[in-house]
Length: 393
Image (cartoon, rainbow, N blue to C red; front, side, top):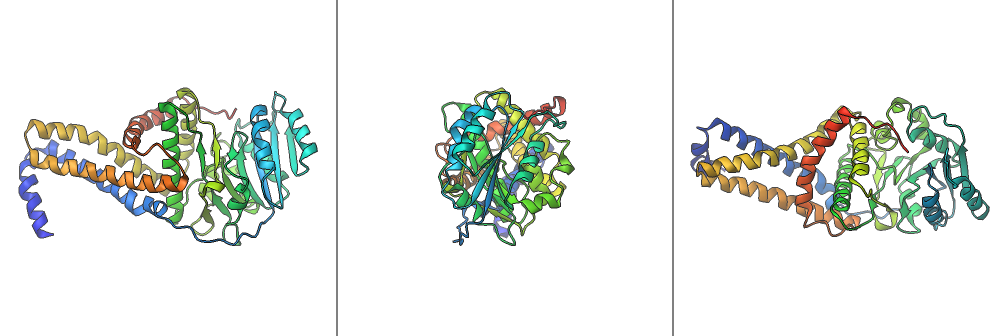
């Protein structure tokens, strides 16, 4: 260790300490790189290298809750795939939230074919909070069973074992199950951006849950105990926030002891991705808005990862430029090595995680997508302060 320190001092610090700007940039760059490496190998590796244990499936009674507002097309296409799940004891609660299309007639028709379909219709617009939470709370209260699985009308289960795989983790101890919901693969950069963002989010909330610090779930594939919902008076503490029916609720009630994760292919759902940048930005803004209301510790560890990634790339360009101008070639070796170490670490964790999530064709382009988010995230966060979005549909 002493030999290595002496080598660094001889090769690097004598050349750079005389320039305070270079020293500041190097400390910022190296510090950010070390933080990134800590997250990848100290936190995200928990999910990347996770090995599932065999769980006894007791087939408990389940209520699937879906909120729908003008979702006729999606309900017609997707609802039968949920109603025809290979599971012995379940109901599907669909909350038709003031739809103006033909959803009501469609659901009545389905009810004749599927007796385990429970339709709840909201006919008057009494939802003063303009979000999904009111309709979802109505659906949860109407559910007959204590164990709930939540999804959206535009979500498709990847198998007829979806309910079976998600619910098997429920026990006296486990009250929440975090699932994975991906997006359909299509051509174009936007689709790659959306899918990469979804994978990175999943890696983070799965890994932190495994580290005993669960902070969010995704409402497209999320399960929890109804008793837990009523214990905290539902969404009452954050009803005024339009988004957050999934992540803010989990942020409030999840502990290191009451959460399990499920990511097998059979347990996943898939949705169509946004087709325009404008729609996707609005969706991202809602997620950012909810994130401001996370617990302080959660905001710190999420912020540290994003900020260290931002400063890593931000400092790399001027640091490398100044070193080249001053012809300090030895320090450049360290800078390039840290860049290589960061990217390789990210690729390894992503590769292992994508294999688990059965996500393909994003690995090689992932460093570019990662850099895109370094630019996009601050802009979306800033726009969220200037222009607020408060509608669900």
